[in-house]
Image (cartoon, rainbow, N blue to C red; front, side, top):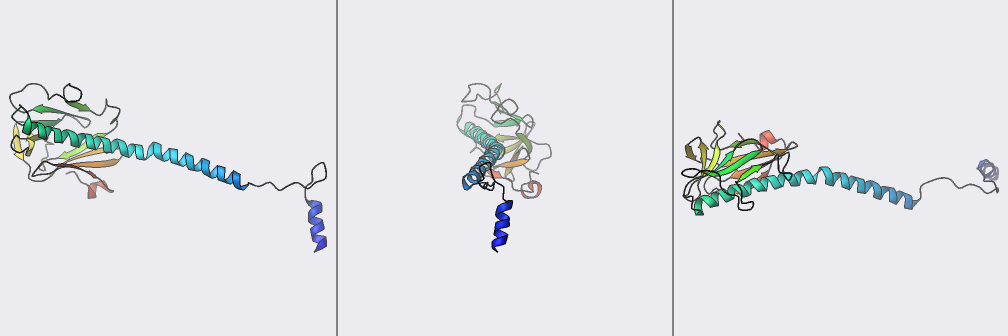
Length: 206
C-alpha cells in the first residue's frame, strides 16, 4: 500500500520548485457562473421569440375586438342612424363606414382620420394576418354590420344584410399561432379565444 502511494506521488506532475501541481478542475464558483450565464441566454432567447410573438398576436386580437365593439356602439348611439359596417378589405386591412346615406369612412376617435386599420404599415401588428372569417357560414366571406336596433350583428354581402344565425368568427394568424375573435349572435358581444393545436379541428373558422 505504501509502495503504491509512493509511486503515485512520484508520477504526479511537479512545478519548478518541486511542489506537486494541483489537478485542474472547475470550482463551485466557476460552475455557478456558467449556469447563470446559460440561464440568462435562455431567458433572453425565450423573451425574444416566445412571449413577444404571443403579445403581438394578443394585441392584434384585442384591437380587432375593440374596433368591432366600437362599431356596434357607434351604430346604436351615433348620428349616423343606420348600419355601421366593418369592411374586411384584405387579409391585413379593414375599415369602418356607415351603410346608407353617408359618404366616406367613420372617423377614428384617436387619430381623427378615416377609420382604416392596416397591419402591414402598423409596426405593432406587422406580420399579423386575418386568415379567415365566418358570418352565417356564407362562402362569400361577408363583412360585418351592426344595426341601430340594439346593435344586432348582421352578415353583409353587397347591399344584402342577414341577422346572425350563429356566432360570428374572425381568425387571425401570426407565425402559425392563431386567435379567434367571436361575435355573439344575440348581443354582438365580443370575446377573444386562444386557438389550441391542431387549429383546424379545435378552432375552425368555416
